Length: 468
Image (tube, rainbow, N blue to C red; front, side, top):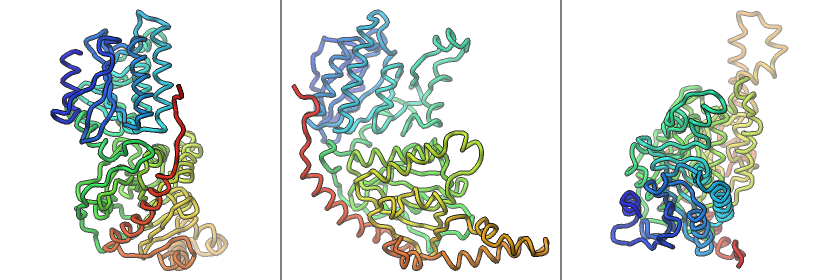
């Protein structure tokens, strides 16, 4: 084990807890074993960049495959600190087959245990696939890069001249959704791993650990801005969750959505929200994919999901439709519809068209829907709806009165369909509260749901993943 690897492992593990290395001296490019992070037993592995640039040898991949199998059967999370040049050229098919075997173990174990990766150096080829398969992927902008095929391949097969950072630098890929968190250096990335692990369960048969509750750090405003005025939804999130507990994920990508982990009364939860300060919270391809991923990660790891809704619906335009918005939008609906964890939805201000349907509406599977008194749910934005419903009257009206009439008709529609009390009577929400009471309402709804889910979870018996 090189000094570089020893330093990284010591930074990750609890001080003085020790590292139980498995099969030292065999497959020296990969260092694998067990240790303690925040008092939790974890499996971990890392590439040794001082052994063939951390390239993935057949022997090293054999150890990695065994580590994932043991971790899955023991029920402990796996942490991967990536610094690898990819498959070992000198071994040819042996290395490639080893990578395939290791990845099979990763994929099979993924249903049983949390997986967290940090790119502390290079992550090329098979290493990149393993990082991408993690529940949370963390990048180091100072020296981290990730790609499947490197600059030499780009030059050989496409005639492109590109450097490693331009091709796959963490800072470049952060804006494309490849990483959930980025930190400015290796030490920050490793510290982020320690932080993330504390939100996750030991395995998918257990609930995440509950810690000492804290008061919310934010103070909710009396009411949200009217109409199309934007605001930062993070202020609402922080007024509901425990103080200092909101860890935002994927901030660089799909910015009309805000997602992350948090705690409510000490209990870890996933948070999903539309961001009204970005295109009125419209859901584009990036926001749909980011949100669907967070919901799926929470469902796997038994984190309840709290959804804050304030959106005009899906983003319109040829750029989105040509990017296959229906397919990617369907992934968002599918993630909510198939999730079993407790789900509490909060209607903040407006939920139009597919935005209402896809953001964990009652029909899609929300266990409890809480609405603010001024919340709106409509099939179409009110002015557009007025133009359709009252088309003949608008066509017959003088042109100079058209805008006035559209505004008047839109106001009528709002009066007919808006308001939390109307939604309550219609059966699409369960409770109507003001912003100041929102934390208490979410907390009271979440507690019994989480306890009932934990009771069901404890009764499930899982068969062995890797039978002898």
